[in-house]
Image 1 (cartoon, rainbow, N blue to C red):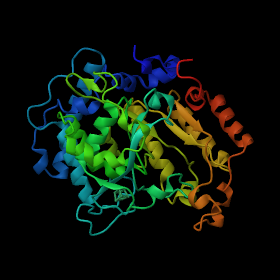
Image 2 (cartoon, rainbow, N blue to C red):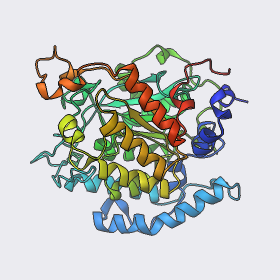
Image 3 (cartoon, rainbow, N blue to C red):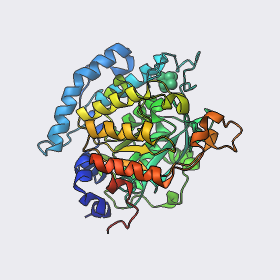
Image 4 (cartoon, protein in one colour):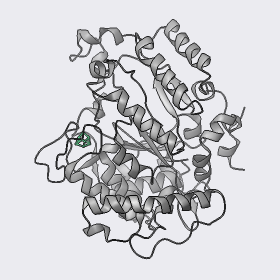
Length: 419
Ligand code: SF4
């Protein structure tokens, strides 16, 4: 049995049940969804089709994808060979590329042409994707960091403007980081996974802003891509941790399934997205790690300059639950926001997805503009310019306990790996 399989967290029945697909892909017993997409033949030429045709093709092929996913999951079918011609995987990549020309990647729905860059939307990005760094993340939840880390690819820029952002330097500056294309992303993912990471963790900032580049990278990885020496050299400056000298691979079969590269795709997102993007991501993402920060009042507008937050995130979460996706939700407890944010967020989760694990995070600290020492600090953020008190944290945990949420195993899990 792999060390990852022996982690104590998998003995927590609700966690194991909620993340069963992810766990099987992480241990290469099952293929990642992008590998399954590559086996579904497309009925058009994605490279020359327009957005409407690609979207219709995605809708037409989704039931075939779901039927094959179910058959593979239940052990009735093996993965099968990739399609000889274009597949659902290329449909996803081409659709994301077309959407970039009238961008609706997130709920801002700016409809700007990011490809030609004549105007910019709320994220201020053009077509270029930038990565700050890539590394074996040892600070994620135990189910994701495991024994060899979560293979994190850290994009710059964001579509929200949280005053307290702990990555404010990279989320607010569009010029930060290093430009990457699909080959660089595929190389980073390949390398991290083959070095032992349990998943590929797309994060920022916000990864959905880079959906076109990510989908194209997955299209490479699902079609037998292996990095050339020059690919490896190009991404070397982005590798930011002590694992960079690790020999590939930890075990010869790690990150490999049915003769090809395999890795669970982890979508680490604010989930401020609409349904059309979720329909696409559903075909590529094996496990979701969304933030759910703000309640239904005006807090998201006041603290993150983000309108329609609660309705957007709850609609997205409800869809993921309806689709029976593997999911772990994060909620950050903020000072002075237990009644207006923590309680309604937890209430909503208990009412709509009581079985989903929730990480109730206690590590808030006033950062960026919420820090009174920052030149951009404003008096309106004074209420969050402190740590949450012990009383506030206790109230959050007590509320979650009263609601019967599955939170303790993933929120308080700093004990030994196999205890
Ligand atoms: S990613 Fe979101 S914020 Fe950026 S242009 Fe597209 S819709 Fe607008």
